[in-house]
Amino acid sequence: MKMAWGITGAGDRMKETFEAMKALKEAHGDDLEVEVFLSKAGEQVVKSYRIKEDLGEYIGKVWVEKNANAPFLAGRLQLGEFGLLLIAPATSNTVAKLAHGIADTMLTNAAIQGMKVLIPTYIMPVDYREGTTVTKLPSGRELELRVRREDAENVVRLEAMEGITPFEKVEEIREIVERHL
Image (cartoon, rainbow, N blue to C red):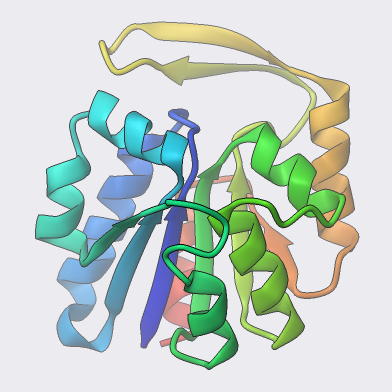
């Protein structure tokens, strides 16, 4: 199976998500082909966490957003080139845009257009439920953050939408991907 992995500007669980994807590639070899699509902010995040080069070495081809249609992930999804779109981790900005049908970035455009042709679309919002969460900064230091009610409500909106499945934990990625192999 060939899948598209989108990375937004969220650093929360970035290293863990990378390790989960790396383990999947190691476990499935040529049965799993992955192309990585970085939003503009996603590129900054993977550089900060020092994994940009590792993405190309361990995961697959890496593309960086130029605009909402470049690279043309949406078109490739619509043509059936990918069997799955995974966006993980996803910022509250990306989640809010999807929850309200705004397709003005490469990843939001791809998700909305992919849903129109029934491409399984999964998203791991970093602000999944209201309350507090602890994230690990690129330095390794922990930072406690508040998840706003409004951000958690956008996840609920995604859960009600047809064609997109939000999920909370990095550990769910293996099951999601293997379900589509």
